[in-house]
Length: 452
Image (spheres, rainbow, N blue to C red):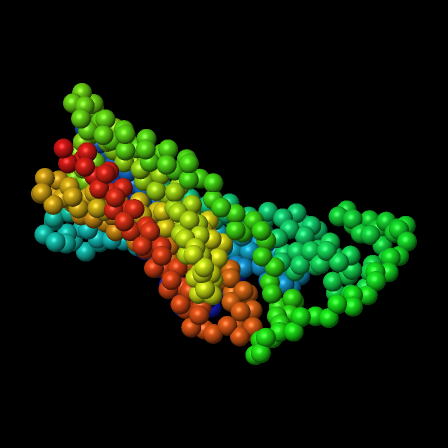
């Protein structure tokens, strides 16, 4: 009931993101049912039916990825002070997020079942003059248990992934990652005084919670007689309490670039070798997407994985380049934020680059008319591309929510709003300038062996 209430009273933007998850689950569920229909219509082609079902794993993974991103940005399942006293601790909020994901994916699966039954003619007759009866097995009875089993896959996998990502990681009674506790402990380590009262504590409290007597004699530091520096005209010194602490680990450079380069090189080398070898086994993807050697398809998969692995390091490098050669306030702010958010925004950006590379390869293949794509191929491509773009936008919203405290502190210190908007536009332009040519280059190299 709590999950239903949170779903009903959520913000329209949150409802829109949940509807995107439902739409992705509906597209994935329809692809799974179409694979079942092909297996029913062609009982002698078990290998082709199994291949169609296996390729449904790509839109299924994209749907799960989008569901996790939407659950992480849901404000209704975010821990707040005082909720634990009401029985809504981190574990309960994690369960609520998983239930919200189940509701959205179940709605999409039911919609997919209704459309599938309508196209088969089981509800109101055969639509479109029976154009869909060949791959939906309209002349055969539908095994309902098998269909329901396939439709439960997206909700189960998505909710499980959400529960694993949002599970509580901090032990009860320990500071964890609470920024308030982090600031208090940092002030206590640096000054040796109580951060809340300004006085030196009389006892030392260990992490175990048992107080120990303080046997060290009290020390009285000499007063500092150095006058404070005078600020410039019109400038006000920033109070330390208004500047949020930023952990040093937030700006650590991603370390996956060597592995990404190795995976990219291995994928391109495998494609080139398999493309010129006549004895390599060949296969055809479902829906006429591509026909070629298996090594070429495996090599393209490795290049897509390399793009995903290289994206965080490239985003971090982009932030460093923005701060090069005597940066001003605008470039410095944009570069520092981009470096801090490279790990968060890099992976979704890499997925978008991989999908763009696949779209470019499919466009090259279909331009000659040799491998025309079918409706299921188009639907699968729309599901994967839509999930990738929606995940990137949702991750951008999550990053904006994560730096909300820093943005408020900058506004209180007098930073103009145009500076923040200009920094956001500069970050977007820098990412497009770096990732656009790089993605097109990898896409061209990956598509050349497929057209031979």
